[in-house]
Length: 75
Image 1: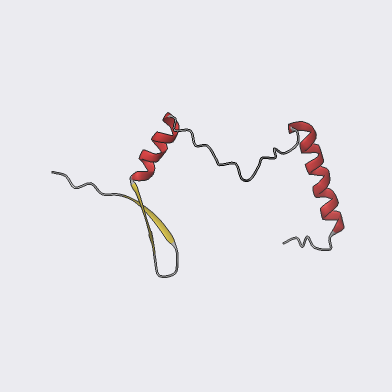
Image 2 (image 1 turned 90 degrees about the vertical axis):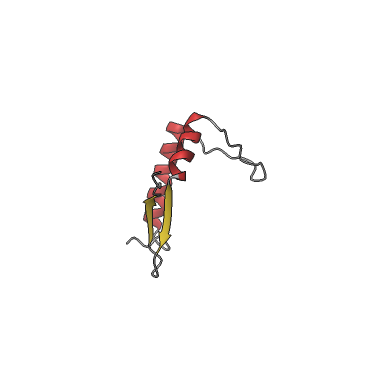
């Protein structure tokens, strides 16, 4: 593991990489943090919500999470 604190060569390298990325993709967008996020309810989002509605998450005593598809009772 790289220790960043006190490692000036790591910081310089990181800053060079981010400067190059900013030249290629432009600066990071800055938005007002008080502006609410607008959620667009398009077809892709609705399909995703339908898929997630079929999944149930359970946690064991150690905190591990497991996802299961909900079972549908057949009539």
